Length: 221
Image (cartoon, rainbow, N blue to C red; front, side, top):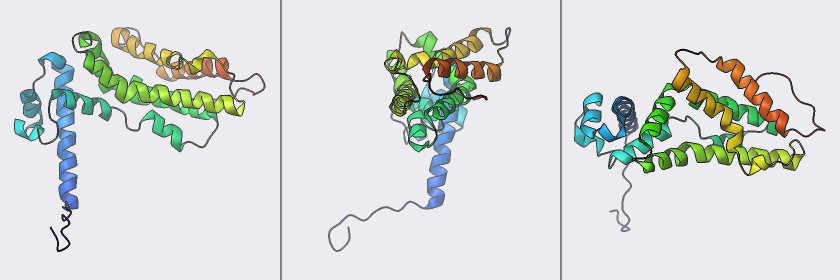
């Protein structure tokens, strides 16, 4: 404490902070590899430590248990939360919806890590319902919130018609979910052209939402 009785702030050197962040990323990458290969039930923190080339005790400096580690892995799949994208965007509602769909495909549908986690959730979600809740909280819920905000913005501006989609934003993401399931089950044998598919997804969504007084825009997502 200083002379005034206040506790001194601990200043962590920049290189120490960088090392800590690097070690955390190393653990997350190792954890993903273990979860993807062994699944949640069979994954052990010993396996993660071995994969990362560190002592098991080091993991506890960053994560208290396996569930918290899985939560961090799920959170790391998304580079920028969908609801934060909405707050930063200054274009029209249609342009923002295109941007959200594009991010869904780049960060989730095309993301090999996201597909591996989805595969694990499908196979083990009934045994570990908390895992699905984590995925919902970290990825699905922010996406639903973002789409609902965009729809309201478009309705308020007169760009979109008022539809039941505001109550069920999941409907607008459904083609993307189908694309992910398709790739999981059939991707090796029945290739899906995701560029063309995403463009069709955007066209379908906008044609169902746009006000008849607003001319549809040409162009891709």
